[in-house]
Amino acid sequence: MTKLFRQLSAADQLTLLAFGEFLAGRSGGGAAVPVTEAVAIPDPEVIERPPAESVVAALKRLSKTYPMLDKTKTLAATSDLVATHIMKGADPVEAIDQLEDIFRSLFETLKSGSHE
Picture 1 (cartoon, rainbow, N blue to C red):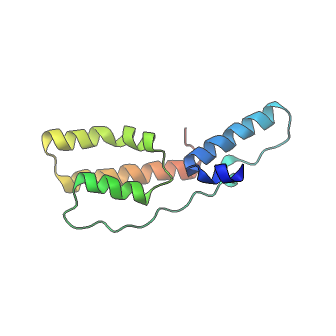
Picture 2: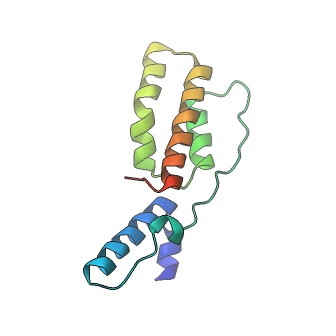
């Protein structure tokens, strides 16, 4: 069972532990350890931003930098920005700066334990 747990992303591990806390509390199983203490969220992997990076390449780099983030949440948070960049030809440097801010914010939210 721990093998399966380790195969999950950090976000999915937190979800599973939160559900376990819920079940333990419902059955009177005693005080549960808060989810944020139960799973250590790894730090982002530092990947240098190359010069003249495209927005799509930046998305790939940021996904590798923050593998612990839920892909559905990152897609939801970044899709409008990427679409605007593609459709309106927004400045790629500015778009990438905004993408980095989004990923950093999602990571901080996950790290703080408010990953709803």
